[in-house]
Length: 100
Image (tube, rainbow, N blue to C red; front, side):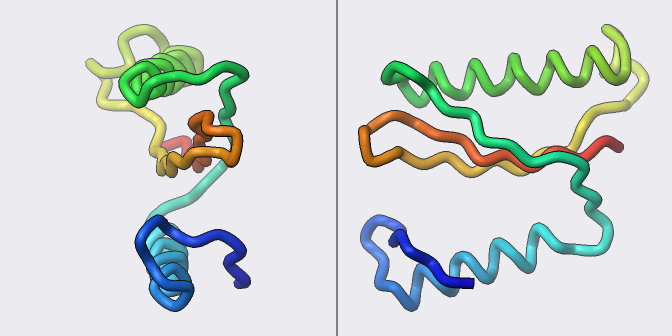
């Protein structure tokens, strides 16, 4: 996999190592990813605001898939999320979702 961007403060080789480590972690046989997506903001948002919005997003999916009492039943989606700043300075989320 070619990495075109660098992780802040890391060399190209370190960035490649991080990408490979994430790939190995996310490809573990026990995890099944059903969907992937990108969540982008039109206007700048704080990290706290982005976290709040993402939690609402996940909670909405949980309620839609498993009902409003999904926590009591012990059901929920599995997710992996990566957050980065776009060139224009706005937060951007990369998301993997797995239905359990």
